[in-house]
Length: 242
Image (cartoon, rainbow, N blue to C red):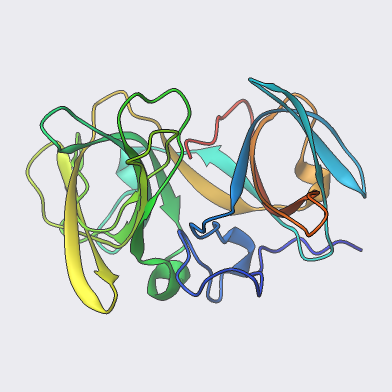
């Protein structure tokens, strides 16, 4: 029977874009040089593989016994409180500041292993994108800029992935704090009013439905075959914002 929890692959670096500790089911992949993100609509899934229709055609990704699954469910800003651990996808504005494109509420248990900032690969972004994960403190986010950790996703060369802790920030902003090479850092990210807020929930292969939007975090084996480390699928029409 396939495992339903996200587990850290031994080939992944120690700092995950959204790593797992006790909440292993919800692990997000760490940025790594050869990681690939397959984004699109689920065409089919069976015990052997998942097929995703992407902007460049259908892509088949092999499933492994250690492949983890999670669903993305709709949430809102009211669920972001002091101490919340967040993953914020953002793009770089002309002035160099970060503007969020999506906020994901992550399990707090991931906090210690998920902090950091990473280059990412959000599609259709002309400027650098990032993914920031962090813990919220004094987070009054009606409209917010996240400071601290980042999780940056983007196809642009300057995209990054950051994990961290959210602290006090101006109205319309959040501050994520995170460690980078054992040094404490922070980043401020603007959160426009229309930015989606979602949360991760545990799942298994049976929860992956045809027609759902998904992001598959994959690697290639020695023969060039894509193998899924984890599959994140939207529930009830939700689009994973990473």
